[in-house]
Image 1 (cartoon, rainbow, N blue to C red):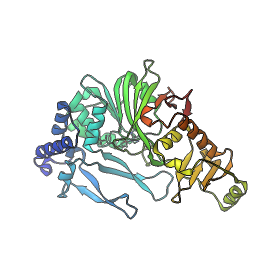
Image 2 (image 1 turned 180 degrees about the vertical axis):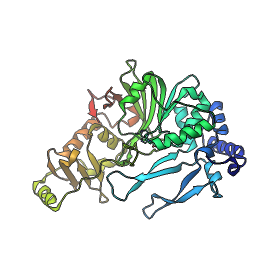
Image 3 (image 1 turned 45 degrees about the vertical axis):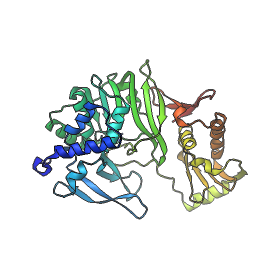
Image 4 (image 1 turned 90 degrees about the horizontal axis):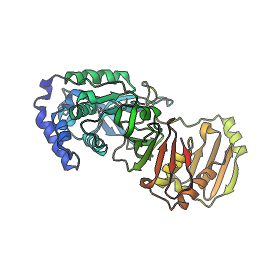
Length: 384
Ligand SMILES: C[S@@+](CC[C@H](N)C(=O)[O-])C[C@H]1O[C@@H](n2cnc3c(N)ncnc32)[C@H](O)[C@@H]1O
């Protein structure tokens, strides 16, 4: 725990941070504003990673900022996300990714407001991280109304101590049928079925719903748990912030399934088995954000990307099928014609007049299976 001498008069810094967040258009409610004014963020972020852009323009680690660094306190009381943990990426030798942070305060406020979180509600936060957001929720609702969980027990233990130092003892064990709101501070590619089990009928869940291997494909998903308590109905909205991918295990970051690797012999075999045909659908459709989202939802396991030349490259689940589309020609092979999957999804999307994602309805089953319905569509299309 950071000693308070290093933090000096943090309350005036917290007030300045609150004013900055308000000027940016967030924090409309007095109780939430008070929670941000009165919660010492520095106790939750005793150190964080300094970032700088690398040659490819991505953020890279450039040292650690600790309490003895003159930048520490001012940055802690800014509206910045602060990276606090980095781990190796599963399946990618030598690669690392950010696995925990203290989210940008305005983003935290935005999610809490989007969920209309208010006193009397029982709230579950998924993604404890530093514990700062849990502390804000405890301030707002009382600690007995707050549950927070993280996949990484090291983080929950540290957060538990920090919260206890402020007198907060939230639960770290979600209970069935007991939460009115669930807010996830990591991105998910599938809705974990236990989220619905833990919710009361009518509960609202908010999460960044995103393809792990392609951060451009995603949206915020807001689900309302149906009266049967076993399924949920959802709508999508533009993401107002991006979160780290859900981890599958605490030891590793997750960046989607690793791309298939082939031996020379396998490459030769694939080349021999590759067929070709013409297509009227241009490869660029994969760059249309709403269509790419629709395709991701309706073709589970399909990995697709545009090449720098504007061609389309596709791989099916377990790399059993492949396709490449360039200049109106599809080169494809394996168990399934993958471009035909794209053509079909595009026909449906176009038949429904290219509806924007905000107009779609999602249905999540008790098993966590998601189906998406476009307005005007007859029937539904299964998704992963
Ligand atoms: C953006 S950080 C959380 C920020 C946090 N709310 C705070 O105030 O400091 C995302 C967190 O999600 C956690 N996480 C990732 N995958 C998870 C999973 N499958 N289940 C629960 N937590 C997960 C990470 O360990 C990380 O701490």
